[in-house]
Amino acid sequence: MRKASMLFLFVLLALSGCSQKQEAAAPGQSAPAEEPLKATVWTDKGELYLEHPALIANQKVRFAIHLTRLSDFKAVKDAACQVQLAYGGTPASIYPCDPSTHPGIFGANVQPGVPGEARLSIQVNGRDLTTTFDVGPVKIASDERSAERPAAPTEETVNFTKEQQWSLDFGTAVIGEQVLRESMRGAGETLPRTGGEANVIAPIAGRVVADTMFPIGTPVTKGAEMASIIPPTSSASDLATLQLAETEAKVNLEVAQRDRQRAERLFAAGAVPERRSEEARAVETTALARLETAKMRIAQYDATRTADGVEAGIRRFVVRAPISGIIAEAKAIGGANVEIGTVLYRIVDTDALFVSGVVPESDYSKLRQLSGAEVEMPDGSEVRAARRLVSVGRMVDSETRTVPVTYEVDNRDRRLAVNQTVFLRLLFTPMAKTPVVPEAALVDDGGRPIVFVQRAGESFARHPVKLGIRNNGMVQVLEGVSSGDRVVTKGAYLIRLASMSSQIPAHGHIH
Image (cartoon, rainbow, N blue to C red):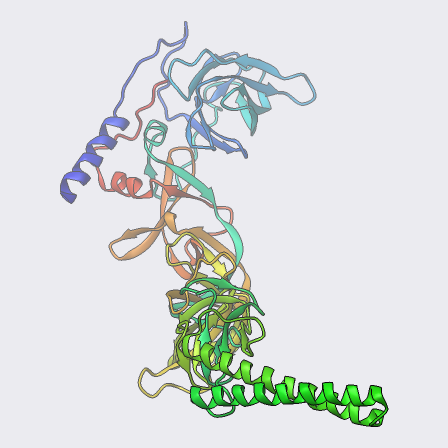
């Protein structure tokens, strides 16, 4: 299957490069016998690839102009252009381009007036592209013998025509410099942060009253009421004894009430002092309080047996959430008896989590240059910067021969779950600016990485490269290319196929 795909690519490249279409030459113009002069100019919007014969005064020559828009590296279709030759301080001579009959390719007849040096530029205006390409100074010879000749090639290049580039997925980029940081990628695990996990425990023994149940995953806020606990009665725990105490309290209250009434009558008759009446009222009040206490003990006893229909005034302890978070464990059961210290709920704060990874002991010395970390989201959608370094282990695990490193990460969007496996990328001290290329520019050529540098519009040089660290899709280049070189980022593999095929012609333009 792979051989068939490669064969298809070879055929596609050959057919694209071998297109030999003819366009009528201008009246009185003959086809150039020699290799034309070539120039390539880039602006921030487009690319000009120009071919033309040597310029001789009073001789008309044909310019072949190839225009590419850099937004998508496709042929410019909807635009017009003109060639401008400026001699010193005199107004420029303007030669309009013919309407394009093929996308991206424009032709213009240029006839310089006088020999000498002129500045050549090509102005493009249209919906696809509006820019001016400054080609620079050109020589206008007085005769054929003194005409400018193409320079001899200084390095071996691969020809890849504009028609091929436009018809395939192709793109280039200028090598820039960036500050990269060496990194180390390894598996990690999310953990609750210190202080971000708490148990809701029963402070006393008793029966649980849970008006609201909290399933696992339910968010709660600090101070929220989680449950109530009704403690057992502190006196005798059998119902008969409690009922006897209530009856005795009722009898004592009735006796106290009659004694108080008798003392008030005697005091009114002047038979006893007022003090006797006050003592009788005090005894009645005490008897009433003992009766209320006896009733409350019976109600407490009933509540601890059923935990249903708990009336106001029944003594109970309210258990509240010590932190905000989500319910990780729920063991509270309404009506169940619990002992002191029983765990009712476990709450975990997931707004911030710890991510713990491990580093091989051989790389332990690198941790002195640790400057940050990134967490790769499990779905691959993004890379999240760690918030702060929590700890670096100081002991090597005897079994795994690794050292733990822990960072804190923001998780307010709940994208990470507790105890989830993730990838932790440790970042080390940044280095100075260095040339970098996109990873897409690299091609495996027999086990060695290479890039293709665009020397001209259709010429590409093969450059083996020595690579350094990788970070965020960019690769450090230690040897092979320099800042400012333009490398192929899309279609590099197709250029490699073209370099391996002897069937691709050196030229196949529509002029």
